[in-house]
Amino acid sequence: MRTQKVGPAPRKFLTLLLVCGLAGRLGATPDPTKVQGPEACGECHKQEVEAWKLTHHYSTFNEMHRSDDAKAIAEKMGIHRIKSESLCLDCHYTEKQQADGPTVIAGVACESCHGAARDWINVHNDYGKGFKKETELPDHKAMRLSAALKAGMLRPDDIYSVAENCFQCHVIKDEKLVNVGGHNAGTADFDLLAYSQGEVRHNFFDSAGKVNADDSPARKRLLYTVGALLDLEYSLRAVGRATEKASYAITYAHRVKADKARLVLINQAAPTQEVTDILAVADKVSLKLNNSDELNAAADKVKTLAQAFAKAHDGSDLSGVDAMLPKPESYKGTVYQPAAAKG
Image (cartoon, rainbow, N blue to C red; front, side, top):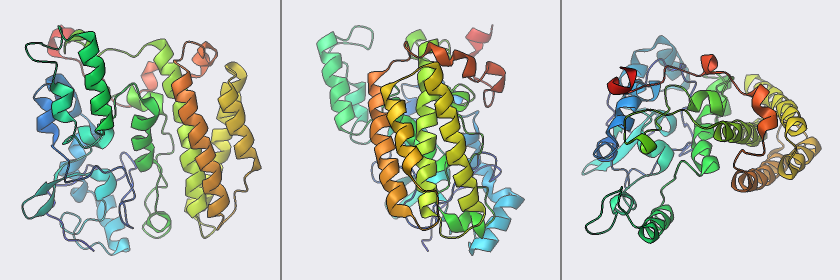
């Protein structure tokens, strides 16, 4: 058990149904030695940070340790002090390396989704000598973006890679945490589109910070479908971890079946070869205990095909799924808009 210098911890432990990493680095936590912190991002992305400060991702940093649910789960798991002996770092916190070791500096923050920024933040900000973002030359922009990606930045247009960080926490990775600790077995209603278009949305780029823009219909279709594919992949892996017939195994076996049913409907509405192949993979695997090799092999195949799907499609050919998409009233949380946009 590691002793952490932990600040106040996340809001209502089960509000977002994120997972505590109890067996090493199980989640999507960025490397503390490369984390720069949200303040570094906020030097340029001021509105994005303002939007983040109104989210559960932000407020969990100060509130989780006060939750009765958190205290009860911690007691069952043998965690004596959530703030100083926390094993929940992977999905509830951002750590940064300090002189005396890693220190929790925030809840789920910028680098949780876009990658620890030490190696790419300066590249990302370099528009060329004498140039600004608005005047950057096309060749320089292409070189800059390529270099940032190679250095570990995850850009929003790489939907699979960014969304994968969501599923690494919204799908519980520790069977004991659920069966013994009593933690909910993941975010049961986690829909990538509904969550990404709600309080966590921060699309200010095209308006220079003036408007938190709605995603295009084509991108929404892609988010919805990639989210369904990722849900299947990560639920298969969860069943692969299951060793006893209890809440964890039962929940994720049902989730795999529900994912398959949703993907059947998606593929009927907007057929693609990748989804057809993914369904064939999922149909062949056995949802049984202690079957990690087969289930992980199937999940690996789903991942390869899902990545191919995300690269091959831009959503323009998926209009058939429009009737299936979550409506704005079902988006999770209130979308932040700058004061000028509200006026």
